[in-house]
Length: 138
Image (cartoon, rainbow, N blue to C red):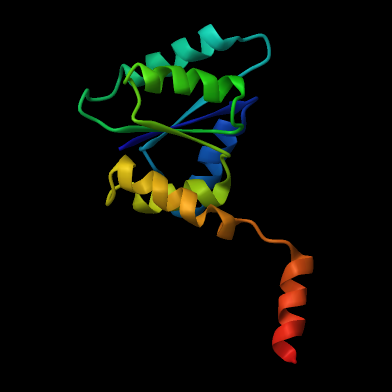
C-alpha cells in the first residue's frame, strides 16, 4: 500500500517528517503539498504524477487535511476515476501513525473502517481527562 499525504501548505511534508521521527524512515508515504497559487487542476496533476511512479496493482490511500478542501477534492476526483483506492480527510499524526503501523498488514478496505472507528480515541482534552480521573478517585 502506498499512502499519499496532501494538505494546505506544507503540512504533508511536515507530517511525513513527524512520522519518520517516531517510526524511522518510511517509503510508503508520499507528501504532495498544496501551495499558495495552485488550484484543483494543478494539485490533481501533482497527485497523478506521484501515482504514475507506483505499480499499477498497488493500493493507494490518500490522507488529506480537510474534508471538502481542495486537497480532498483532488484526491476524491482521482478516487472516483479509480486511480486511488480511498481517501480519508482529517489528517493527524495519530491517524498517520496508525496507518503506518497497519499499512503492511491490512488492505485499504480493512484499514479505512478501522481508522474511522478508532478516530475518536485519537483526540483528548485535559479537562475531560482530569474529570475522569476525579470520578475514578471517588
